[in-house]
Amino acid sequence: MEGGLFSTDLTRRGQLEVVEVTKSIIQLNQPELTEQSGQEQDTDLLGTTDEHWEDKDGWAVEHPTLRERNALMFNNEQMADVHFIVGSPGETQRVPAHKYVLAVGSSVFGAMFYGDLAEGQSEIHIPDVEPAAFLILLKYMYSDEIDLEPDTVLTTLYAAKKYIVPALAKACVTFLETSLEAKNACVLLSQSRLFEEPELTQRCWEVIDAQAELALRSEGFCEIDLPTLEIILQRETLNICEVVVFQMVLSWAAAECRRQGLVVTPRNQRAVLGKALYLVRIPSMTLQEFADGVAQSDVLTLKETNDIFLWYTATKKPRLEFSAVKRAGLAPWRCHRFQSSAYRSNQWRYRGRCDSIQFAVDRRIFIAGLGLYGSSGGKAEYSVKIELKKQGTILAQHLTKFLSDGSSSIFPVWFEHPVKVEPDTFYTVSAILDGNELSYFGQEGMTEVQCGKVTLQFQCSSDSTNGTGVQGGQIPELVFYC
Image 1 (cartoon, helix red, strand yellow):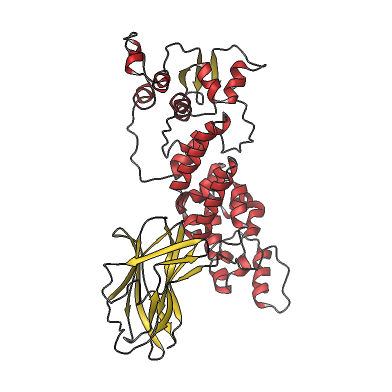
Image 2 (cartoon, helix red, strand yellow):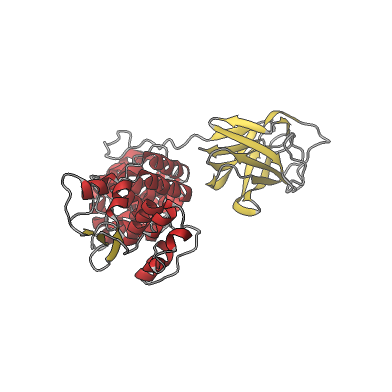
């Protein structure tokens, strides 16, 4: 008998391959489980044994609540009236259970055991659910306890969806949102679409849009399915150079060739991409970028290569299958923390000292750079090192230059990649400038600023050795995406 009434149409990677995708991509900073044999691990981590029943007169006294006594029955042969053979052939595990407990916790199990079409089988095979995920599902149904791990969370979400256990499914989604990073965002996007989780999908898009280059350069990008690849390539708001898009599409195509048992050649890469290749906006690149990269890849036909060269250079341009419109990307938010700026020759100078401020936000954002004041004595060039830290740990650092025109304008300086900033934690941004000493500075600083949907709070930093604080100084803006 099949183990459920789940109706979602899983893709070829959505069933038995979901485990391999998860294990190879989701790398979280959490300790790994100790390797044990299947039965020993289940006993130690997830289950109970018959030893609880050796003292039949005392077990109820030692566990006075119904919840405690019910939890004792989890993964316990005592009074079990159904057994599940869980897992793919060759990797199965036999799990004891109690029909009443499962029927109370899941309408699917209720229909399976007590519905009009209920069958009286005492052994049920479930080949499409991993044993570890099934045990997590059962443990929740017996005890309300949820034990999630990076390696099992996606398979647990699948089990929770299959047997319609919404609280466990929600816990899985929350766990995934918490662990969401650029390196796993594309994989989680694919899975969130598979499991029809729109909130998780939206969180994935926030990361992919803001940190597009990091997301597409990750190993996880090469593991997604073709429909997810096409959706990403259609995205207007990706913050990324089109040259990088093309390079990573070829990397995906190479991985897909290997998955299909094909030799990795330009011809086979083109074949597995199909119409997805036309979603790369090749004409939006510069002529130099096209000539140095795409034109030499051998992925395009000779006619396509020739037509694109003519499109760049000829007065009468040929019709192309590729869009020539650059991606719009995300528009950055600029949080102004001063209400005015000023200049006094005896009050503000740059001498290679550190200007620093602390900030916190009430929702996740991605810090892209800082806005800085420049010279008050005419045009000047500055060398600047900007830095973002969390509790003393450097998250991003960039050494660059910018030109100021002698006005009180604010000049943006960018990190190499946007950096994720979590809510309700103070971060420190710093800038060390070397150039014309005399500078504008901010006045009437605010401790709290509302910028779009984000509220930012500011406080002084002990790293600041050049006078910058909440009320005045340098770093007048934070530039971010959200």
